[in-house]
Amino acid sequence: MKSFFGKSIIGLMKTTIAVFILALLASCSEQKETLPNIVLIFIDDQGYADVGVYGAQGFETPHLDRLAADGMRFTDFYASTAVCSASRASLLTGCYPPRVSISGALNPYAKVGLNLEEETIADLVKKKGYATAIYGKWHLGHDSLFLPLNQGFDEYFGLPYSNDMWPVGFDGVPNGKKNYPALSLIEGYQKVEEVWTLDDQSTLTTRYTERAVEFIKKNKDNPFFLYVPHSMAHVPIAVSKKFKGKSEQGPYGDMTMELDWSVGEIVKALEESGIDDNTLIIYTSDNGPWLNFGNHAGSALPLREGKGNMWEGGPRVPCIVKWPGHIEPGSVCESIASTIDVLPTISEITGIPMAGKKIDGVSILPLLEGQEGANPRNTFLYYYDKGLCAVREGDWKLVFPHSYRSYLGVEPGMDGFPGKYARGQSGLELYNLREDISEQNNVIEQHPEIVQRLQEIGEQARLEMGDAFLKIKGKEVREPGRLGPARDTKVTHKAQGKSVQLITQPHDNYPGEGGVTLTNG
Image (cartoon, rainbow, N blue to C red):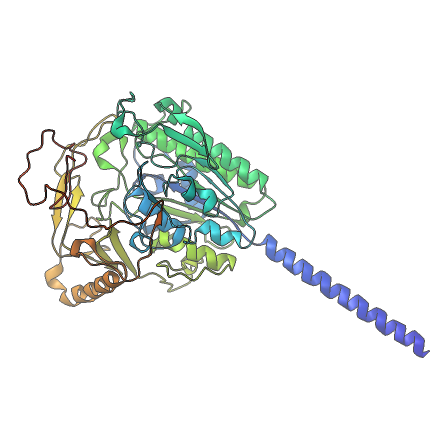
């Protein structure tokens, strides 16, 4: 009798332990299955008004409009700055550009790139076994040391930098421009093709899209991070035959319709793979439109200016986010958010801790989930090329005195050729962006207490990240990746302080900036 009960108890214990283990395994499996896939689509030089739901004219974007209807549209979303490489560094690291020391647009001879010690979104999600891929424009260092496969990505296919950094003129004829090398199409670490014509470039959007679709289907049973930074809408505009002549606007509209098609193909691949309900899609742009290209540029209206300065048309960009079951369909968010917030948001969503380096982004998950009263980001710093141009807190934007590239008062170019730039000079100016989105009414005299508060925010930023306009070096700035030793940043030349007559005038599109700039070296 005693033996019978003993065996029964032992059997019951074994059964209980087995059930517990199975439940634990099921829990782990369920946790793995609920890790969301992440698709990040990053357009180049797309303006605030270049998507249907943001007011596009002359072309339609039905797939993006549907994405907004199924998700959330942001009205006050910012790229970290208004130029290529710096903006991309911020997106992937969650930092303002000066903190990671990436400025401007790195050219084919750059000796720097994104430091491998910085944690990218791809690095982050790899900690939980995500498959990672990038198809498109990298622009964070062209040397193999800096390429995506060393920055957390499993796969890479695309251009190492902007599509205008090639030895070809605005007319599409090779001319040895700036002694640029041939534009290379890279797979992994290797050059697989050279891009020499606009017809070659016209295949890029389709090829990036096909790679993205293939990656989705291949990884439908595993969590993945897919980054699609398109080469378009950067000039030169190139559009495939299937979209050429389709819009009222012309080549820019045709190309935007093709980008919209690309979004549709990616969404369709997710739906056909049965994983769209467990996928977070983020769509945005690296900066505003390059307005001096006229009909080959987009629109930032009603915002002021465009790419290359920090009036609202430079950094404020369209952003649409879809995440079924978490984001209310058709919702609109009017809170401040930025590309620097993508990394920490993904960290919170996936439960993957960040590396611990100081970043500037905050999680905007409360905004995505529509939490009442949520306001994770109430300030934004407008840095451009290491200079602090302005700060925003709530509805208020304080612009600091600085010189900037402007499109006002000059005729834009047409049909792929650029027009001239102007030079603008700001004073200390205050704008209420909720009431004056176009930044036309300087109200600095009426609100001295707001000016004081925003100046204090600016001072704190300068202590951390510096300000080139005031020649202040930040105390919390990290080094970029380098191919060689760092050099003294103070460069002197014999023309300083001298009266110099140039034999050949610099091109209007690239004026020298600064009192001691050597423009004809």
